[in-house]
Length: 201
Image (tube, rainbow, N blue to C red):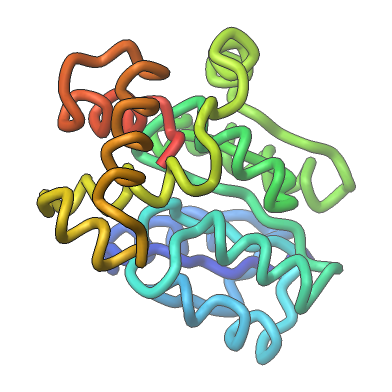
């Protein structure tokens, strides 16, 4: 029997996944959580073989939860499920140690097959996203540029961002100029949009 943990902030979706997996003779849902920061504790309590993790959850996101889960319970293999098929997410998921990455509109039989394959030690990745990821490459931002862009996404002024990140306003402007150039955007709002769409944030 393959033991499965479900992590998704939408209760209705969690219930639907649980009902779907209950139809399979070799799968059993041993735990469900609604936020990323509950994943490790629930995994340690229930000892799942496979965890299905949504990317965007309160607490910590699914990518962060996957890395924490790998460190805390290496025997549990994570599959990232996302509504947003962004290539940058796929790369970050693999770096976090996830064994699978699928979009949520995947057919039910494909999801069930993915759980079995991941449990058997294989990797399962959406082929379209894999191709897009290879085309786009890695995030072009330095860690500090990413920090500045994340802060800019909240809509703060240059002074606000500088205070928040303990940088000078000139340094913030330089980083914003750099990320705008790297995304080929015209404004920082457009740079945020491009980076978000590509899964770099």
